[in-house]
Amino acid sequence: MEKETISKLKDSLEEIRIKYNEYKKAKNKKEKESIINRLTILKNSLISRYDLMKYNLYIKSESYNTENFLFDVDNIILKLKLENDEDKVSD
Figure 1 (cartoon, one colour):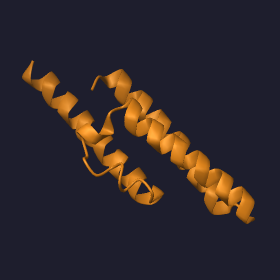
Figure 2 (spheres, rainbow, N blue to C red; figure 1 turned 90 degrees about the vertical axis):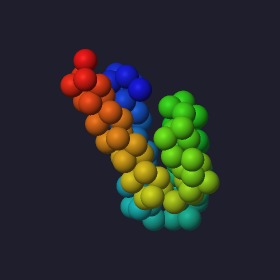
Figure 3 (cartoon, rainbow, N blue to C red; figure 1 turned 180 degrees about the vertical axis):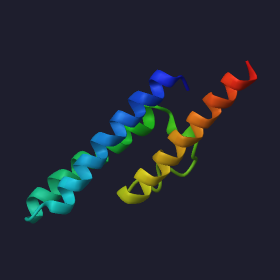
């Protein structure tokens, strides 16, 4: 994955992180349900847009847990950055 794409992935992940923080602060059930629906859409979009199953086969089935999802995507980003750095060294 290119450096620019990794940066966009990171920005998209930050949007999910912000929405998850909103969920944790939400007071009523209706507001929480609305945020959960939005989080589900954002996570599924992120998985498909950046083809994250290529890097973690189980990410889609485990995406119901937002904290684990954030951790998994952070790990993918870290791995991709390391791969890009190694590519630069070998060139």
